[in-house]
Amino acid sequence: MDEYDLVIIGAGPTGLFATFLAGLRDIKSVTLEALDYTGGQIPELYPEKMVYDVQGIPKINATELRDKMYEQAKLFDGEIKLSSKVTDIIPDNDEYIIEVNGVKEYKCKAVLIATGIGDFTPRKIGCPGEDEFKGKGVDYTVKDITKFKDMVVAIVGGGDSALDYADELSGTAKKVYVLHHSEKFKAAEKTLDAVMNNKGISLMMNTSVTEIKGDSKIREISTINEKDKTTGSIKVDALVIAIGHVGKANVFKSVNIETSKNGRTILVNNEFQTNLKGIYAVGDGATAAGEPVHPIIAIDGANAYIAINFIKKYLTPNATMFGGHSSSLNIK
Image (cartoon, rainbow, N blue to C red; front, side, top):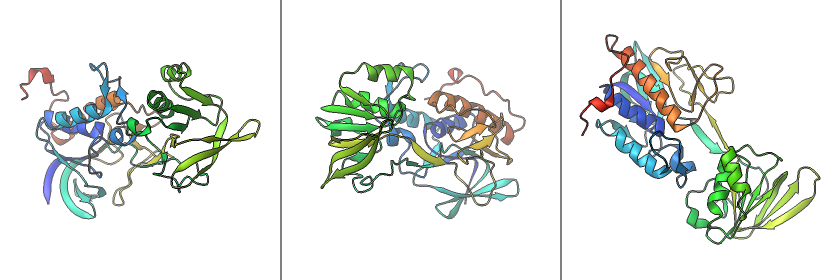
């Protein structure tokens, strides 16, 4: 059984940055990722999108950002193990044994959970034809914009993802419809302005999809106006359902980690420590009681920095809380 100071669970943006920071503070760590790739939600939900809110980088493609984060994580030769789902955290005196894929693989003094919203699945409409045409024109994310070239595309949703997809696809698709069950969007102001001023996008408010029809692929969607109950249909080549994802915090059977009432986030204190000594959590899946979660890479990265410094102090009580400025180091 391999022994480490710290096991980091999750190799999304937060876990990757935590891997780098652990190396910066001379903490012997291993990062375990359940998937066979790094980046978490980036390659799954928005690989083609541009990211604008990372300090010092005016704009960067999300996939390129993920790749640079991986490169940064490896600066201190931090170990990252893919296809390694943590199935349990087992207390062992003042340490923990980490079970991976059902096998006890690692022993460590501290654990940092950075799994985001944990196991998550797309939220479905629940209408007839949805499961039948999944992968046959029905998608829940836009991973490759070119796939929709010259298509008539309908997008369901009223948040940032739905409107971002609409704006991106409008330059590639023949026609883009946005169907939203309400008369108010939930997207950020700039995103909404871009869509409202885009002549290639038709907005259908108070409108829901009631059925998806086709043969070997999607051909048509049936709709209903939630306000006046009138029905209609739209001929489409593709339907993107972007109404969010359902997730929950990872639960490990041998430890009772306190979570929020809805079970979606792990509760932490101002040191990002859970109710259990030596177990910390950071990122989209962690929150201080009563505090909102801000699912932003830059914020989660800053919180990872704070958490790693507290972990260093936990592991080595005589260590300083602040490890110094990285600009003073000669990192090759």
